[in-house]
Length: 476
Ligand SMILES: NC(=O)c1ccc[n+]([C@@H]2O[C@H](COP(=O)([O-])OP(=O)(O)OC[C@H]3O[C@@H](n4cnc5c(N)ncnc54)[C@H](O)[C@@H]3O)[C@@H](O)[C@H]2O)c1
Image 1 (cartoon, rainbow, N blue to C red):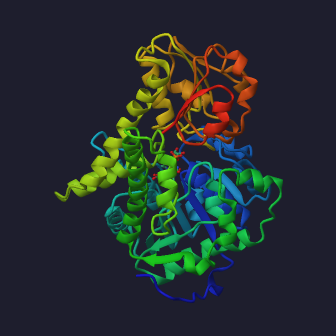
Image 2 (image 1 turned 90 degrees about the vertical axis):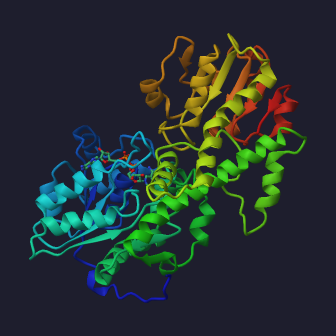
Image 3 (image 1 turned 120 degrees about the vertical axis):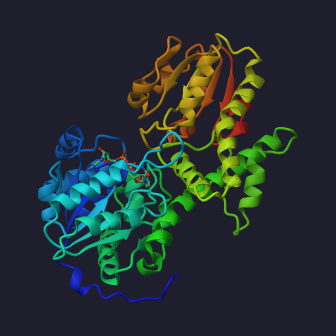
């Protein structure tokens, strides 16, 4: 239950050194921001190559603004990238676990990385430590970790476990880490809970002094900047709870957002049967404050390293108790089939036979602001249209290198410059809503195309304006 509290942080202000285990999207961002907030932070990863890149003052993946924070962290010597658990853990009083939790084939969550990192922590710990579990895990994982701690525990050392799930969004990871809209801290030991809250408060103090210069504008490119001004005071955003509630909050949040997306996509299928415009319908219902507008834009559906696996994990967890979470099964089905609905729309523009039709595909990452193509619906659509014999030129501002590792095809050409992607195309397919695609002046490329067709897979293009240029247009 949410409680009114005033926390005395005075005891915790000076001595903190932190280890962040797993230097990926979540861990590296957290480590970089903590170090900029003045906290000595070890960024620990088992991957030497990743640590090698971070040591040079940059990230090995694209995330707006992150490089600048890493560079400053390294320069101030507050950020210490390492593969050495021993040095990191023996110098830390808090260790955040931020390792990956991918899906197993049956949809259950693979916890191997989490348990391996706990084992490595326990093998190296020599003094009191708070372990903050931040990876997204099924309910009950904390209890399993506690059991490991009890079994390993040197009785003279206090090791306490806190669950504090992460809600950052790739593409605005820096913004979300600095300005989180809620901070969940689950655990039984009040002192440890307060210590972790104190750490987060250090980030909040840092946030209060941030200068909104050009660099921050860039870091916040894909964020709702207004949110930073409208945020409630720090302690009103902190929710203290028990371990299991904290674990469940995270997967429930992602499952609910997936439901919203699939709901909007179902409505778009209904709208295809009449003249209603889905965007207007969603705008109309989203204006009701009880519903809200976000995550109701119809489109190709959700993807990425989190939603698909977290929803699968939730369904699997429910099934393990013989409870069928049918509403989520349905959300997954809608998401899986949305790509075929998109193809039916493309056929409305190009005719039933797509073979040898040439597409200019805009976007490969699962959303704008990231180079991540994991479970990307845009990349899935690419595969499906290649299967149907289309010839595709594709451009993405950041994700081409990642996509090249996964998709190659004789009919597929990766293009480095947006201007060159449209040549001799029969259709533009906008698959990821990068600002660059929304702001692009399409009047400049109409001459380059074979025929003027535009499919907006993300509901971001102004239909009237694009039609004025002579395009046949279809969206969701
Ligand atoms: N990416 C997101 O947008 C996001 C948002 C919220 C929560 N999460 C959750 O946070 C967790 C981490 O996600 P991510 O996207 O940062 O993953 P990631 O794959 O980007 O990073 C995980 C890192 O952990 C490292 N690692 C694996 N085993 C290790 C070990 N034993 N010791 C040290 N390092 C190890 C890997 O080398 C990798 O660099 C997942 O549970 C994910 O569901 C992710």
